[in-house]
Image (cartoon, rainbow, N blue to C red; front, side, top):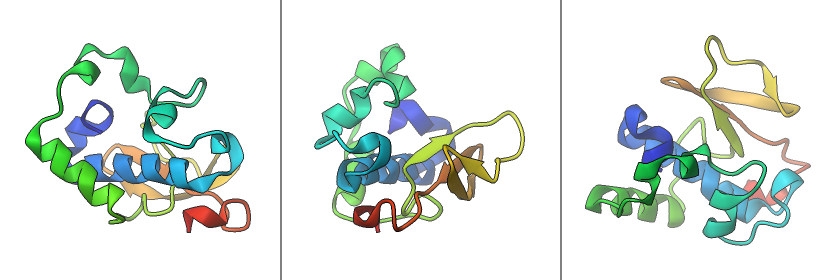
Length: 123
């Protein structure tokens, strides 16, 4: 979560955590074969870009462990509550990404959620 969104603060890291948990729970679309956090992070293509950064492999700090526990225990944070994707565009958030609607923006990241009929387990 830190490697993907440290610059977005605790709330931004929580939202990245929501996306990760949703990908594991979803069993849909690009994430159908994903059954655990490790598979989700290292999924190719589609996993987290942060695995390419050296600090991704540093030990988690106590605050990051606390944040991860919150999302694993089910806390959700809008606009990532039901989102499966996020990215940092150079400008405005597009209305859709991977044919999924924009759920909103937090700081520099845009979040996109699947349609409920395509991914009921996310909801």
